[in-house]
Length: 192
Image (cartoon, rainbow, N blue to C red; front, top):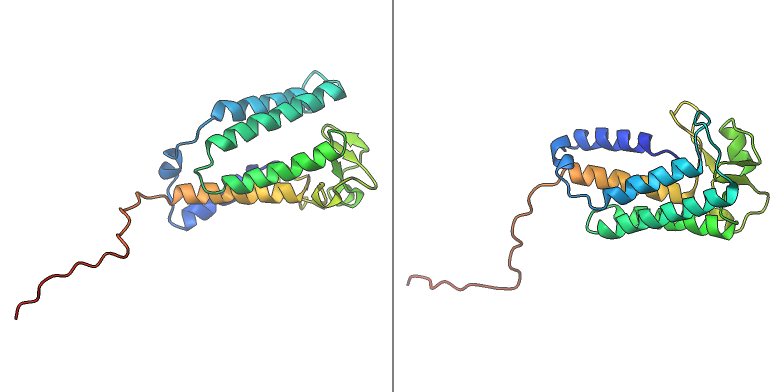
């Protein structure tokens, strides 16, 4: 699933809730090189139809798994941000499904039909009748009117929620005032 739509919705929600884009831009995000490296590996592994190469299946799967390791490294560096644990849970869910099914993400045939797609194996997806860990595979179709829509999994839902939470929270961040002291009572002498 492509998360461009999630980012756009989160930005709009953040603005509607009083957040600022400038505040989002000031949010310290560590390990961006890891994220860009992961994206580059995925493009090399699974080039779009317009790119002039094909990567052999076993090499593509290895590159995909390395890209997951890079993304996990980035998440570890940003565990202080809200939403990171949801993204990590989603990545973990997807990774479990991929590893349990030979290095490809299984997709339900009904999801492919609903997404107006038809294939047995395409890039990082494989249509299987009885995949291992079936609850974690790509099982739903993004509505056809949503740009870049495809199929998605429980892990993708968690990733999307985590990204949205991180964006909205970062847009609304303000300096946190000092925490009040709890449990301390000051007695002031009363005039008699």
